[in-house]
Image (cartoon, rainbow, N blue to C red; front, top):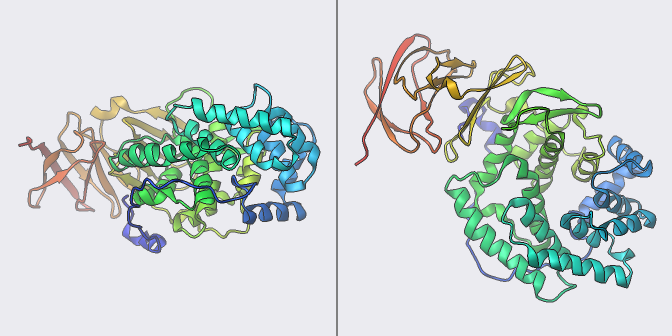
Length: 448
C-alpha cells in the first residue's frame, strides 16, 4: 500500500508477521457457552454499558423492550437476554429460532446464547436444524461459510464428529487452500459487503480455537482497514435514524442502508479483534462521531455488541489521502477528509468519480484529459501515451488504462529513460518532477 513518508510514523508500530504454516491438525473448540462473540471480557463490557445507561444501551433497550420490529429478532432478543438475564427475551429468541424464518446464523447465536433456557425438546430441535445446516452447506461464499462456522462452534460438544469435520474443512480446505492462495494472488474474493461476515468468522474462530487466521495473509489484513476507510464516498447520507457513511458500490438508485450499517459494524468488529493495531486506532477515531451511531432496528444490536467507547482513537486525518494497493490493482484518492471533497476510485475494473455531491462512472474517461485531485494526478492511457503535466509539490501521478502486469518504457523530460511495471489493475505510478511543466511518454515493451 502506498503511504506518504510524512505520515509513516502513524503506522510504524505495525509489525508484519510471518505467514502461518498450513497444518491439517484438527480444529478444536475449548470454550463454554456463550462462546460466540460474547467472551467474558466482551460480556463484562456490555453489562457495564447497561449499568451506566450509555446511549447505545438505551437505544438498544428502547427498541427491544418497546417491541420494535427488529429485522434480526433472534439476534437482538438473545443479546438482550445475555446482558440483562431476563428469561422472557431468551425464550422469545428460542421461539423465533425454531420458526422457518430463522436463518442458520441466528439459530447458532440463539443456541449458544440461550443454552441455559433450552428445554430438552427445544435443544434436540435446534441441534437437528444446525446439524442439517452444516451438512447441507456447500456454498463457498463468505457469509454462508461464516454461518456454517458459527453453527459448528455452537454445536461442537453437543454432536460428535460433524462439527469437528465442518471446522476442519472450513479452516484447512476453504481458508488455507482456497482463500489464502486467492488473496495472495491478488484476487478480490472478499467483496466489501461481505467484510462483516468475514470478521464474524475471524472472531469466532480465534475466540474458540486460538487460531488467528489473519496470520496466513498479514499484508491483506494490514491494508484492509485503511482501504475500507478510503473506499467511502465523501458525502454522508441523512436517514431518519442516523447519518450513514456510504461505501463504494456498483449499484444505482437509493443507498443500501443495510450495507451501510454493516460497513460500520465491520469497522467496530475490526477494532474489537485487534485493539492495539495502529489501523484499529485510526478506525476508532473514525467511529467516535456519535451522529453515525447506528440507531435503527437493524443496526442498533450491532452497534451495542461491538462498540467500545473506552477505547482511545487516532484522528483519521492522519491517514494518507491516497491509497494504492498494487497487489489488487486498486486506487482511491480524496482531495481532503472534508465531506465536500472530491474522490476518485478504481477497483475491480470499475472507475468512479465523486464530485459536488454526485457519483459518476468514468468508463468513457479512459480517453479523457487528466484529473487533478490536489493529492494526485490521474492520467488515462488507453489510447494516449503522451502527457504534459505541471504538478504541485506533493502531487503523485497514476496512469490508468494500461495492461496489467506489463513492463513499459517511461521517458520523462530531462531524465533518463527507465522501465516500470503496471500492477494487477493496469496502474502505473510515477515519481515525476514538481513545480514545472514536464512531458512524459510511455511505450509498452513487448514480452519475451
